[in-house]
View 1: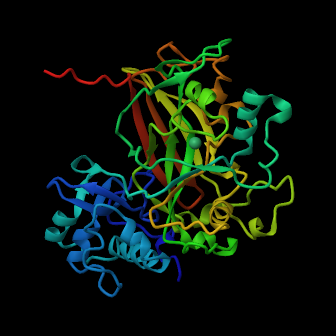
View 2 (view 1 turned 90 degrees about the horizontal axis):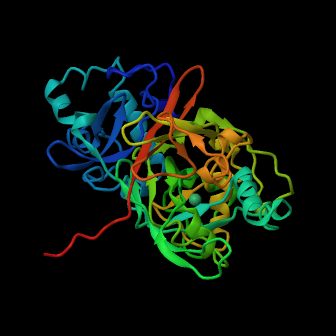
View 3 (view 1 turned 30 degrees about the vertical axis):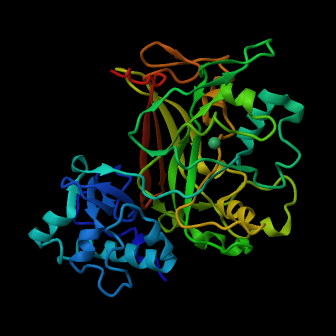
Length: 430
Ligand code: CA
């Protein structure tokens, strides 16, 4: 099916600002609460949110096989489970409805009042109910940097790293959309030169610059997905800031890997940008340094050129961009990750989320965490208000942004913004 929605020449009758992440060629999917307190599935063009539930009820998706309530839900899981053919029909139809040459909705004032919202009239929710969250460790630069710090240069990359996309199973209960503040976690840490742990607030709270892909129902128990089919099961991507407490991590991670240092919060951007919308931003993945087993070998361009940045905004001060990276630096691409994940027959369901792992680039200003940017705190970063950061301070807001751009079009993700509050204090009972 042609991706008519991607036509770079199409112009919308809705206003789209020059540097908007959301031109009519994007058509992402999200879930929002409307001014009438109704939850609905929607999309966005420019700074206008569009209620797809209302559009469907008004008959604008006629001819596309959709159940009546597919968009009147509080998650995208069922729509995603309908599969790639349906996603494409719906995106193409939305592009037609909002094309400036189409006057049907454009000239229907009553319908427009029902369907269109300003961004300040809505509240974005988590787009999917995330059943399972897997986080990979797919950037060679990041794995090398962290390995060097924890184990020394000689043993930076573990012997398995160049042979398989290393990953672990995370928690979905603490995944939150942009705008929800979090508390500094507490836990066990080991003081330097001591063999006895202490309990208290983490002193080394960090961000991790990542992206994550959202899957559809992919396979049954026991079945594996061949690499050439893997992308069919990827609905789209979001920005992911995978909060990490480095001091807790350092003590607890042996031998089973990340646990409480990672599962207190993971923030995602609320609009899922479809893999289809990113089609013209495909690039070649980094060349394998060691030959990979046949089930992980792929053809074609499986990486995407997505500019990513992370900023820190201290309380009552201007933000400072501390890192600029790119999704294309990932050594293991999404098709390899999904294939590897199912090679043993592990089922992947609609609404599962798979994180890339921190994406660090080759230069020190492209490192995707404070751990690497300040090299364990040895080189603090100066904020615009003159204060310094080794890690994240209480009341700092961490903002991640991402977009693709070529001569024709800019497709973006908006942002994921999260404020770090002090340790949670239970209210005193009266
Ligand atoms: Ca992570």
